[in-house]
Image (cartoon, rainbow, N blue to C red; front, side, top):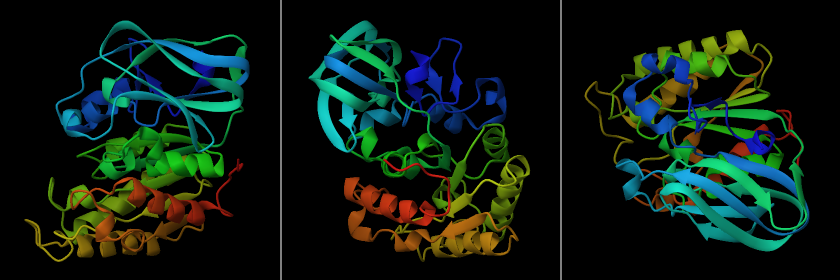
Length: 323
């Protein structure tokens, strides 16, 4: 069944999908590792024939404290392209069973109730057959809570998931809410993974949670990209600078940097790097303040707009298959 599993690079000792290397966790900040245990963007992709649904057996845990504040409901979501064909509520507990009923013929994607950090034991067709979906180019997306999809109503509406479907990429979501400040241990983990495309989208948490100066973020961005590039010399790398955040745009942090200044420093770091396979997408152009649900994070519409911008930046440049 693991041949159906997409969007994952590591498994824990218990077989749960995790989004950072368990063998390297002692070098990661605690907030990064905690978010890595949430399987954001992890999904099953299969081709169904003659089935009237799927049954999923799984074990789930209670949400982390941070996840108890999210709008995302713990549901299994079955997609055909962009169409939701069935949903079933998930719950914490051992050896649970859900059934998603629909006439299944063709290619489908099953998204998990990620806040439950589920371990899926079996995905079984109700009648008919299920076979693995075709392999697709692997896209690594490193970022913070916005990349993780923190305030989307469903995991499949996060911008990395949307872009992956639009361009036919195997999206590996390495977004860590509250974290992702360009730690070089994370850069080394990205460097250790095979990839056809890479996107780097961090910077917002360098304004307040762990404050950075513009000069520090400039050098951090350069160092992060240098580590990734050394392992992936010819892979297209897209840097998405921070999206708009009204309370931070012109307000200095503890080191005197505004978010606008941090964004400019990161974009300058990309511009100053002589690399024909590296591009920057200015985040301030992607959404407006009206697309933020809490002044910081975009909702579903904001994620749709970010996805459109990223897809346009990658289309015709990065290796994509289309769908």
